[in-house]
Image: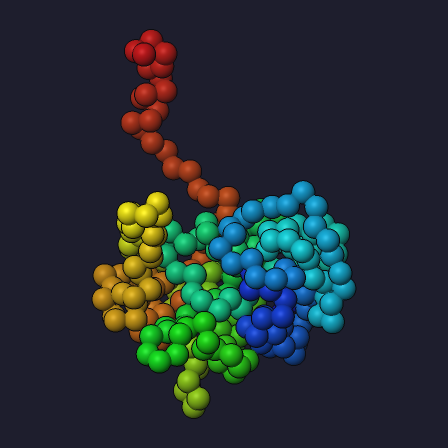
Length: 267
């Protein structure tokens, strides 16, 4: 068990987000944590990078006027280059499914770290929404994030010594919202769901309305995800942990090899 880790903590909700502080406090109980996080909300920016970004000191570390990927590059290159691991989160809102991985600023921070060869974890909280209170107005207390912070702290504390990152670039953790009095949600090792339900509609007035139907399907339980997938685990109350790789893997492809061999004679 590793007890003396140094950690770069970032996110995409902004350095003053409740979930960020909840995860900072949980990790700081046993690790040396330096915050290098965006000044403001940078949700869904993916791996967008800046050419320069203003930095200022913050009580938790550093606030960057840039993206989560900016924060990782700036942190690992300049601000805290000797850290043992990077953690991104805790994001308010789940990052589930293969189609989300490239969009999420939280996940993209972990991917950026993996390219540096530094072990990384992305952590997000599933907030169901629905009912009388919009999901944006839920999860306003640090205690609401305890399933996510507990699982992240546990895995970060043990995964390096266990050799997890010898085969894995980063872990994508998604946890269910914790209700008062609930026992800790169990962990399930998962794979990203391939279910996709994006739609677009022309409103007739010069605008295209795009909608991700997955969220409503999660709230109603209308999901087709098989056992072992990230979304199925979270909807059923478990903490999903997906071990993922970066850079993306490339597989042999006989049909494509044949096309390459025939080029350009058959054009």
